Length: 86
Image (cartoon, rainbow, N blue to C red; front, side, top):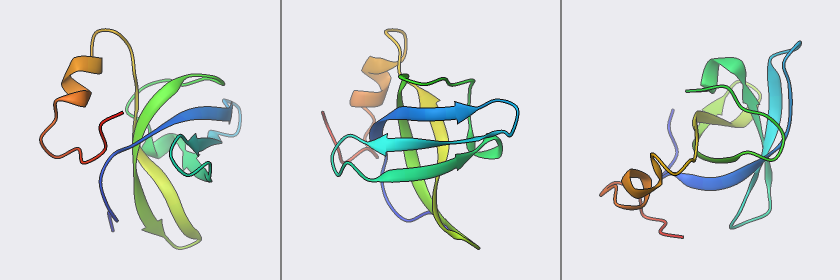
C-alpha cells in the first residue's frame, strides 16, 4: 500500500548481488530499505533519486525508485502529484 508523495534522497548503498539497498531521505535523514523489485532503473551508491514509500510485510520500504538526472529533473519538479518541491 502506497503511503504518500514522492520523496527525494540519495542511495546509501545498493548490493547488486543481493538485489537490495538503502536510500536516505533528503528531508528526514531516515534510511529506507529498497529491493530490486521497487526500482524503475539501475542505481548505485551516491545516486540522487526520487521514491515513494509503501508498507510491506517487514515495515516501510522505498518503491518506484527513479534516478534523477538532467533529462528528467524538470518533469519531477513540475509533477502536479509531487507535494515536495526541493
